[in-house]
Amino acid sequence: MSVSENRLKDNYRRFSNEKLMRIASEDAARLRPEALVLLREELATRGLAEVATKTIEAQLREVSEAELTEYCALIQSQPCPTCHSAAQPLNATITSTVMSFLVMTTWKKKFVIACPACLDKLNHDASTTSVLLGWWGFPWGIIRTIQALNFNSKMSKTNRVAYPNELLKAFVLTNVGRIEAVRHAPIDLQGLIKATQLS
Ligand SMILES: [Zn+2]
Image (cartoon, rainbow, N blue to C red; front, side, top):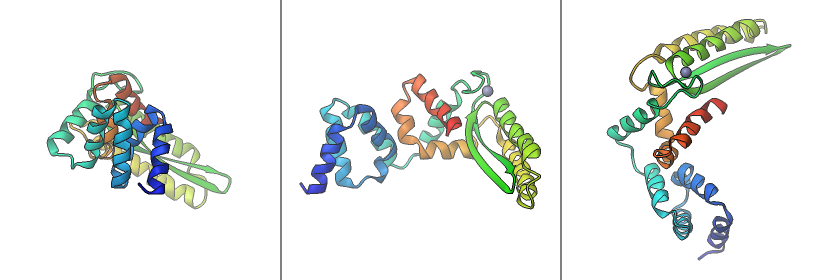
């Protein structure tokens, strides 16, 4: 075993279970093959081999259409992280908010998963904030505010569809490992969904 592999092995040994599982669920696809072997070995010595294998494999293999549908349905059936209602299937949007301060104009985009009513409200609030605080920066405040209003209006068109929209599918595809790790733990799954609002 090379020096760098020994060092990596030591590192993995020092990490907590949570940290190792986070690597397994988020970074497995980016690890070198030899690093992945070491990670699997360390998880196995801690009795976490089974759940880790599923998590790692979920990231390494291509997700089939059927699996994508299943993961999306799982997310859509959770209660809304904002209003806690489970009456409508969840979906995703991106809000765009423009704010101007003195000569500076900031333009922020935010991905969020919530129920249709909350998604509409979030897009609407982002537009309202942009109109109130964004427009007066010259010239970018005006330009960006118009862009933000168009953007929020376009995004909100798929807030109320019953099927998973493209944004939700993209979220699932980039987070398959993390979703697989918590699919049987509703509280953790809801935490993962809520975390999208905080990022
Ligand atoms: Zn809601």
